[in-house]
Length: 305
Image 1 (spheres, rainbow, N blue to C red):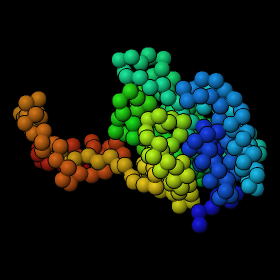
Image 2: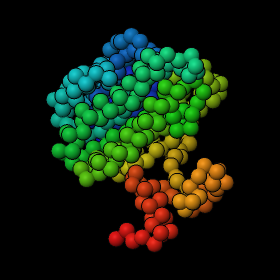
Image 3: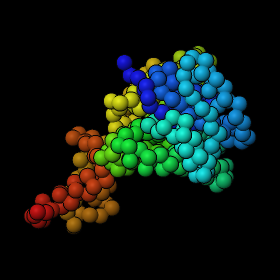
Image 4: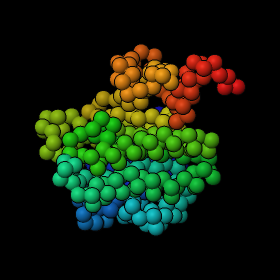
């Protein structure tokens, strides 16, 4: 059984929806939980401690340990205070679930730069700020489990969500790098791509579909991603009881000698470039460079030593 006894988790945006479900499940499985929530509306306006305090009371009623903290995830000083409060209350921070987010949906033509920046600040920079606040602590202890929350809107795109999509795909890049940097210190970083019936999806889908999209089904996947035996660098998609993984592959592509390195020859070979046969999942940014340079070296008979 996956348990979290003796572990402490910070869950951002945990006053409602997915974050609340994550916090309750982790607490039920033995974790000490810091319930973070600014208490704002879906678009990020307003603030209240009521939601976070209510979740803490719910955890306490089932015999769990939790504290509430209203840190704005975009403000480094407030996040630092939250981490300090967690360590003071429970001794350490073992798990960070970056879940907080807002929506400011509009087509790109109608969206203001302010609305674009705000959504990126909350989702992407908020996750950066919270992760930075626990990073050295986890490195020193040789243990950490961190989850970013992405979205199919970022991975695949969704009309009217250029700000949200850009932030959510940015979190995948953040995970990729931090997985490499944290590995030697026992820090595993993963990404959850959820779909669930929450304040953010109300009105977008028919009631029958929303009834199937329980937050609890998503939290089951989240709990695995922050467990002792967690994977690393994985994008786990979860919703309505379905679980899948999104992976980014690169096709083998083609090598064109210097005399054929023209736009016309790229166009002529484009179907070969798109051919997925033999595609590979690269594990760091150098993989692509090594592939291309190796092909060029072979053409010229150059030894790369």
